[in-house]
Amino acid sequence: MTEVPTIELNNGVEMPTIGFGVFQTPPDETAVAVESALRIGYRHIDTAAAYLNERGVGDAIVRAGIDRDDVFVETKVWITDYGYDETLHAFDKSAGKLGVERIDLLILHQALPGEFDRTLGAYRALETLLTDGKVRAIGVSNFMVEHLDRLISETSVVPAVNQIEVHPYFQQPAVQAADAGHGILTQAWSPIGGITFYRDGNSSSTLENPTIAGIASTHGKSPAQVMLRWHVQQGRSAIPKSTNPARIAENFDVFDFELGHDELAAIDALDTGHRGGPEPEVITLETFGMAIPEA
Ligand code: NDP
Image (cartoon, rainbow, N blue to C red; front, side, top):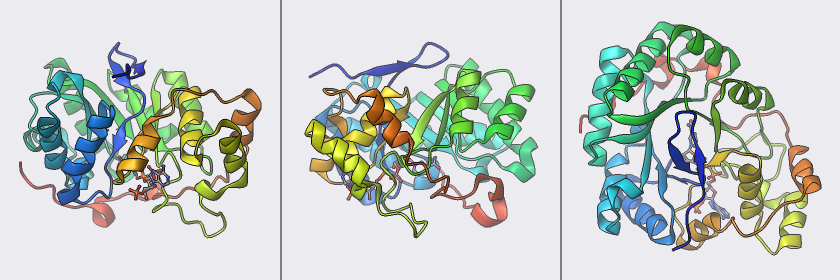
């Protein structure tokens, strides 16, 4: 099998650049999709407690017969489990469902801007888990510039990763610059446009964008492959999701071509400034709280 390209995190841990996302993958289809991804060559899976499919990820690793140490497992703590003690317990819940002793990358799924002390408590629990060797790296998701600044000024470990919405139509340059300034890796969610998510009503799907389609035809690649290659060349991790075996394979086959400077710039120019996902500033326990089951 070809070697899987990796990115070094700020604590020296190596993470495969392209991971496999499972948001909106139904729990009963997750093991099949993840097993298919592992057989194709993916060695990095991105799930979350709130996706309710961590068990399927763990089952797939066993079913694929891959050594646990050869798969990079990333999951997220949901906001209902924020607070120091609650987040320590959230690790037990996720590790139990995943069937692993240690999680490679554990991140906070969202900031709780109105209850930032609770967010800080959760992050301090991640720091303890890191010290105790229960996780290999820690990070955040959907943290905006001010959330990062506050977190970093009040805690000890700079996050290894900030997983945020990045695709050609929404690129968050200010957050990406803040990540880079702090030595945090930007990881792109909805990296090919989050087909089921991106709905501003004004743009066609990124998959149908003529600029991206033109670049794709020049290289004999698909639009999805061009978008993933754009992330890779700009130094981001990306975690495309699919439940279709052909598309799972297509999304991993992005390491044998190179986009030119003008092509990268043409994709950069597609940013609309409109996010597809929820506005991070309005996340509250009242609107987004949900109980995460025990393992
Ligand atoms: P993606 O950009 O990965 O797009 C997924 C969609 O595109 C699905 O509808 C999929 O359908 C389709 N698709 C996949 N590959 C192709 C292809 N080659 N050609 C055409 N269509 C394709 O968006 P997601 O929103 O799923 O994000 C990816 C991952 O990011 C999630 O699974 C999750 O792990 C993470 N995420 C994190 C969030 C956060 O808040 N931290 C929020 C949202 C996502 P099909 O399955 O039928 O192939």
